[in-house]
Amino acid sequence: MSDARLLVVDDEPDILSILVYQLSKEGFRVSTAVNGQSAIATAAEERPDLVILDLMLPGIDGYEVLKRLRQNEATASIPVILLTARREEEERLRGFEFGADDYVTKPFSPQELVFRVRALLRRTYAEPVTQSRRLKVGSVELERDAHRAFSDGVEIDLTPLEYRLLEVFLERRGRVQTRRQLLQAAWQTNAQIETRTVDMHVARLRSKLGDAGELLETVRGVGYRFRVPESEG
Image 1 (cartoon, one colour):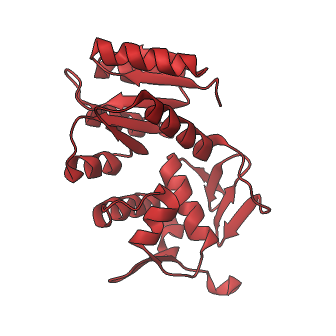
Image 2 (cartoon, rainbow, N blue to C red):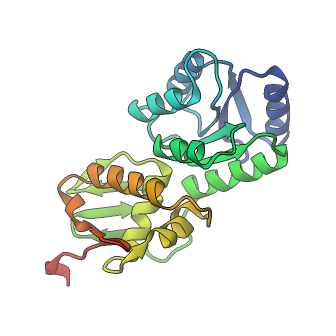
């Protein structure tokens, strides 16, 4: 998706100019915002394919912007990459808990950001390379071609990370998955950010699944398992 629409949100003119130049050179269509209110309005109006969001914004900070994007049905599933000058693990965890899909720490290489943008777009929108286009366990079903998820026949609105997490659970149904395994498969990272990040996303996913959420079991002291209903066992 080299022609994807991106929204870049940063209040530092120098960084904004560099990002716009680099991303435009790579073929992306780029819109910008310099504060939280403008970012929220622009995202809702333009429905970009991906948002690059700085955390340190005047007025409404990046966390609040991310929270509001996830609360709005029109923007809830847009993938978001956070830009942060903070290296503390706590800050990264907080971003993931609010629904971020990836993060880049300042100072960063523009090429690194382009790589991460392409990787996230590919994971989010590209057609999966798999023989099975539909994946169904109990009342939960994925339509991989359309990147859609259903529970009891009703479509559920998932972020890219939530979708990938559910896909991993359904692919590995009946098998216990440790938090480390889930980080590697869904987050594609080995970072030392195990417990709260995974637990928060699993809890959010379980809630969105409704009654089918009971199939997503916690295995105490180990991790999680998506249980296969007895009728399919």
